[in-house]
Length: 411
Image (cartoon, rainbow, N blue to C red):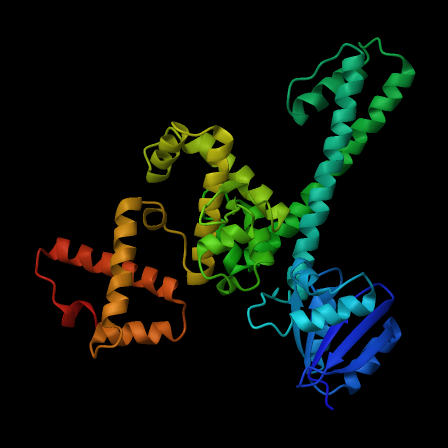
């Protein structure tokens, strides 16, 4: 029987394959060494291959896809329920083979080499920042032991350390040597971080998606490039809320027996992206809460009822949703549209939803437009697009001071 589906358990040196035919019967259980992988799959007829989205998964997905196979990556947590009992490579491969065939399974888009390269830059930069912080904290503690307390901020720390090493200081030579080594280490980290920032800036200049994202408040070059490189296909998410939930910025639900209970945010998904969004949201709150903008008004109202940290997470959730809209529409960020009167926006979306349900089967220009959009986009996105159209029509009616004429305004 021909193999139609293969579950592949990845490792560093030894791989495990489990294949089934179109009836679901097991026809392949094979252990492969790294050097056997390419010859084996090059001879295998094109089939569906499932793998866990773990280390080296994107590399193998690109390699096997180039051979004509259809490759799907599955989050490891979604594979675990299909493991029957115990733990072995063969059982894991069988579970992957079973999971990849489920019609409701969610998959991870395969990243390109360019996307992985820029994400590698992000991870290296994050590592260097942590190491610089470790050295700075050690230097601050050593200076405090000698009676020298630095003000917050790495710039103030470096200034105090330089004063401690000056000729007027009475520190012993042993202390001077140690402090000098730590200071030079901090300077080296600063130069390396600056070099990686230049790489991010160059990639940002070449990425249209990253440039659009950077116009959103709280999303600088670092966050914009991270989001653009991580989110391969934004349309895999049905809505901005699902994107925010994927990042772990929505409340965790624990409901049973008809009782709904919401806890803190789930903190699932990409921890690095979530941290960048929360840090950016915190900066936005501090710089805009006293301004006269719709976003500032929203922030002030929330700060009256909720603590600062909760508001920063709520704003990070909002920024994630805006980022999803910018990515899916492939349009520039427009603050007056994306952060405006929430009540009016909700009314327009609800009205658009009702219009879609009542007119999509009619023979009118508006119904034709709705049907064409529903063939390509999910229902919720079409309702938002129609709400956008209705808002524009309302503006035309108000500015022209004329009655609504469907044949002119919806063609």
